[in-house]
Image (spheres, rainbow, N blue to C red):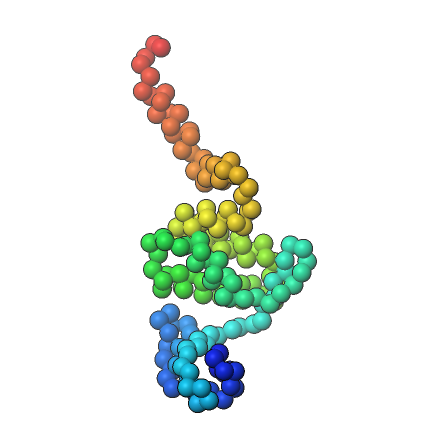
Length: 167
């Protein structure tokens, strides 16, 4: 593993243990050239995935990019870090088990939205606002109203129930 401080390729592992999520190994490393210490994580990767963008461009799947976008959506939400890590690992496993190495970016976005919808609706709307490229407040309003289509109906029913008879 290359030292992030000096670029030396001869680093030493000082400590290895399972990470908190139990799906990766946490390694503490030491660089004898500069004395730097750093941590790396090792994960199982079933296959190399390639993301096919909507414009046809292809790029290697980047778990860190997925994690960043999910963490931004969940920022300041009451979700435990372990739960977030489990969610991200679950999404990656689902992508790897789809059977194809080429994954459409749209499919990734839909899986992330589906997963966020089950965990936190605010994060779901945040992610959707970027994923679906909301341009105005009306876009949010329409999206949220689609989340709860029965709310307007139930409010109308309650108002009708409260009207005095004969008026």
